[in-house]
Image (cartoon, rainbow, N blue to C red; front, side):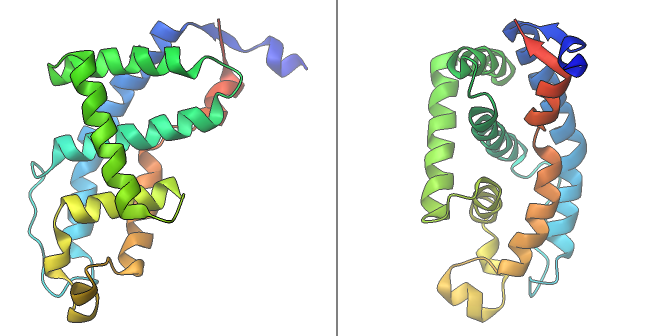
Length: 180
């Protein structure tokens, strides 16, 4: 009981600021590791030779969608729509588009993830598949997986293990902070 009394109060606006700024920083610092992992992954017959600039905005969109999905699962007792709208507004200014346009980008990205992840509901697995298809990695696979146009499951598992580092731990956040 004492743990709940010591939680810091935070409003939706500040939460959105912290979330957006930290997610951008994590993506900018972590995307090179994702690229390095892809370029060196043994699942590929030859290296895709992606540069760090390849697909950075697509990667950020995929990571945002994943985090917003985890947000919805973690904030059942709060007004998730209000928090999500604050986040969308802040990211829209980062992407230099209107909030409506950014919402549309997120919707299209989520549809892409869902389509490529069907029938699975595993969010992280869907993000890995989205990266595989957005980065056009099928061309670099061995013929068996290439002919099926499906990612090597070992590659997806390795990518999942890296992508978890780009997901906010909302449960830990709720242990430290209380929305007001």
